[in-house]
Image 1 (cartoon, one colour):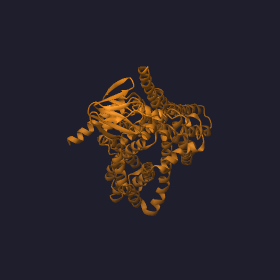
Image 2: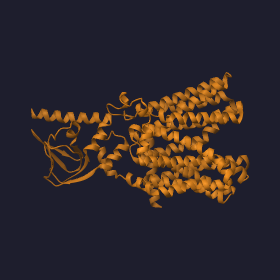
Image 3: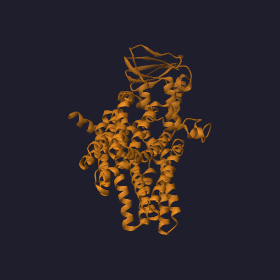
Length: 559
């Protein structure tokens, strides 16, 4: 119990750090406005379509909006890798704000419904890039793995609240004051999001690229190859294939649930139309409770195991409802399902963020966004066939078994992901003592931390000699080093770093470095060091300035 209490306290501290981090706070508040606006917009446009064309109009408009978003997301998300991600979010917000405001004007003037539907599709297209840009930006501004997970817990909570507030807001405003007011308020939610997005500053770390990359418009930039890079990266990275595959499987089951919950409430349990709302609310309440459960798990850093647990909690309740078709059982079971839903969302999103290569992260999340919509649609299409073939109870049992079986089948691979992510904080702390490495995104720092090897030097031992080939970069954690220069000796006490000049300038070692006292160092191989620093413009610029200053000082002293 004491340990659980300590973990929860650590997790709450991580959430507090999220809101103490100005950029993360602005991202989360912008996401909250975006989530409420999206759900309110969806309900408002569905009600409008129903009253202007019946159920068929609702289905057609919804299908077109989802298809447009799914088709555009993987390619529009490439903008998040070519430009600063907060600016891409700003364009997304501005576009949705304009579409919602435009609809408010159209419905107030009695304009043709086709114009309203066109702007509704436009809002979906603009919205398709917001989540990929936001999801790929968060790891760049999070200061630690725990802070990244806590940020996703916060976003998931805001999303769950949006599921309640958004639809209620849209429906209430239409009933109370009509369509113009409803769409005007929806526009205001996107204005709220815009207000926070314009204040985000990623310090130049957003979508940085090395010289010669696609940001300069050379080679693959703007071409089909660059646009498809997200698909190729996922195809060649086993962890991404696993995580996105599991997330899509959960979305497929969620798509079937949208249909199954209606059949369960009305046909199986006899709860009537109101029962559908009760069961859906139970899922939503569980999702909010799931954020609290996720908070207790943040400090464990066992996201792969949490994902497996979430998959089990997602599917098992459906099996329980199929086996025990009672109203009370269904309400409790679906609340548990909601908890599982939050665990899957948070753990899978965080793991994907920590696995995605920063340079193509926007496109990876664009592919994810598209596959989510496609999986939900496939699930919704499969559900009626399953009910016809197996009956409602049989469909619940069959669909419910999918995710637990996948959790068991992939448990070993998920544990390996956890093991690979268990980077001691000591290595991360050592990397952050180097000014130009501290500028790198969290994913890159974690990767470099995993590449560090520890070296112990006895007093008087030589680390490297002037003229040697530079094969490693060194971070001094404990002790004192002597740097033998042509004009004398310079002492460096921990924390300090040496060895970057030969690597960055591709020249022999410019000095001899030896231990004055017993010393402990972290060594980073040349390839990993150069791949990290050369691929990040600000880090490279800062490193070059340090190299220039050290060489300038050495030359001045030599004269």
